[in-house]
Every structure is written in C-alpha cells, then in structure tokens.
Length: 225
Image 1 (cartoon, rainbow, N blue to C red):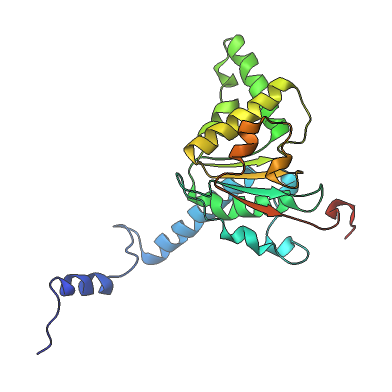
Image 2: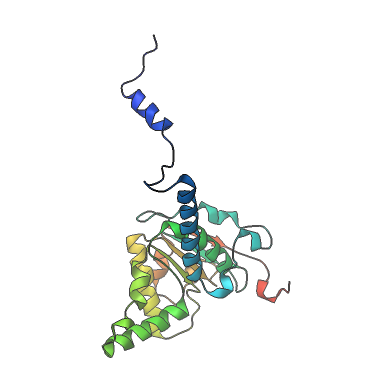
C-alpha cells in the first residue's frame, strides 16, 4: 500500500478542477469571449496613455538587435532595481525601448503614467493655475507622477528649463527612489554621473538601486525607411 503525505488528496483534487469556471448563467464560450473583450479593452486603454508617435513601439518594430539587457528589469513595488535608466545620444531608440516595456508591463499596474519631462512641467503649471483659480480640475500634475505605481519619465536631465522645473523633476525622482516605486527613465546622459543638471543628491540616487542600460548607434530619426 502506498502511503501519501497528509492532505495529498486535497491537492490532487484541486489540480483536477477545471482552470476556468464560467459564472452562473454564462456559457464557457460567452465567458471566454467576455474575457477576450475585457483584455482588448484594457489593452486599448493602456495604448491610449502613450503619445501617438510611440504607439507602434514593440520588439517587432525595433530595427536591429534588441537590447536584451533591459529584459533583466522585473519591476516590483518596494524592491530594487526601482528604476530602469535608458541612456544614450538622441535618436538611438531610448523612448522606443521604454515604451515597449511600458506596454508590456503596464497591465500589471492599476495606476501608471507615461509622461515626458516637458509635459510633466506643463501639467503641473496648469494644476497650479487651476488651484489658484479654485478649479479642482487643475489637480493631478505632480501628484500622479509621485503616486502612480509605474511611471515612464521621458527625456530626463536634458538641461532645459527653469530652476523651478528642474526642482520639480528632482522631487519626483527623490520620491520614487525613497519609495522604490517602479520607474522607467530615458535620458541623453551617457551615465548616471552625467545628470549635472541635478545636484549630487539626485545623481547619487540615480546610481543606487537602478539598472542602467546604455544604448548606442546612429540617430534612428535620420534614417529613412
């Protein structure tokens, strides 16, 4: 007689149960169609968060060898590496790679945001103006970048903008570093030490607990199809 460890039959029974049980009043085909429809709707919502120019971005539209080093980044709230830094000259494809990862990973996060530094600054300026005028619709500029579960912040440390704008971006990076909040960052810097637009406290945080990938190559924007 074969002896089994206690509880083995419960686990065996659980394994034999169907993986998908449709709700009462719904056939298996109807349930499958609903799940497929809901998945398509969620994918459409995710895609709409991305600027139109980058909605085509994926591995298959990338020309050349995919930078496989980025696949090592498995974001999880409260864990390092909290950020993926995509570094390199203008036009090497940093935003393409970043957007590909955002579209791949975004479904796993309820609150997420794709934003360029320039748009972040503009949205916060509108939010401030709205609050000053008593318009609650002005909320959500800086707060959404601070509090979202997944953030893609494009074109960091370009050196443009006012001292106020630089401090705004620095506050986002400081907050997300402290909370180990998953963040994808693109920058024309070649290394974390090149973020001279920020003070040492921020450039130091961009070296701690981050995965840094340098992309090299020609300016893809200047290459005609």
